[in-house]
Image 1: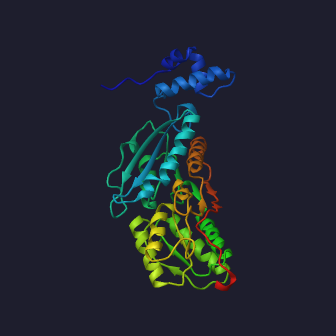
Image 2: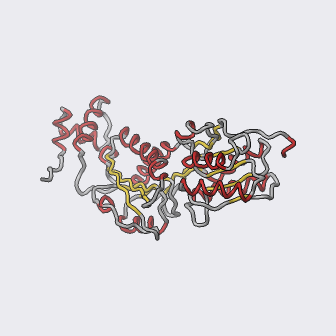
Image 3: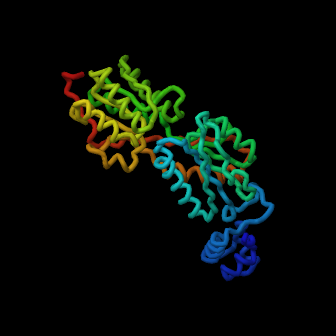
Length: 345
């Protein structure tokens, strides 16, 4: 049995106010006591109250419903359940604080990067705007825009026609490798990228190359690989077998840290005594590796928070030029990098 849709008088009754007062609060009108406003917003949230026939232009924040879509690949892609779960946690936090209803769904992709099936919330007429997060190809984002016609914001996803919240991956990769260079390393390997990889990883690769070029280092040591854990392990072994002169490795995400460190050990070398390593993202895992991992910190929940705020602005001002928020990663120094003596430079 489908429950009936809540009405304005239901919100008023639950909050203990008149219908006119409830209406003033839900339409962001002034001259309402803060405690009264809080009661009305809380009641509206509990009842999932919204107006039928509304548009994104006239929906008060307290009545808005945001849909979040993420993508998963049917393999061992752990990034879908770690980095993006933190993005979604930030989205959820901001929606709770602003009394916004949140609907979440994911869709899987086939080997051709097309949706295996579209999630139902995509077509829900009561959703006012969408946040898309994950390794979603641009042509799929275009399909979503065309099919829904709703305001869209991308968080760690890329399409030129949408507002975006991104990490500055090029600068992050550059600073990670620059740190290794400043510690005396000149033979620095890279794993976790491959042609056609998600833009974030290729940008970190660009940062690696930029740092080497800036310091006049012509030797690059790259083994193409996906960001799956077993692939990172194999790539690390291949890298050290092919280039035994390597003294440091930059890998493009923290999730594979244990596999990289284990591969170094299985090659008869140690971190950081023989091989220094630097990761990216500063996930909780980074403090649990042995040794604790030097990495680039990204405030992942904040990306979700900013995504919600950006979407609300887009809903209020649909004609504005698209915007891009770039968050600069910060170097976090722990114990996985060892400075080389001048003789090894």
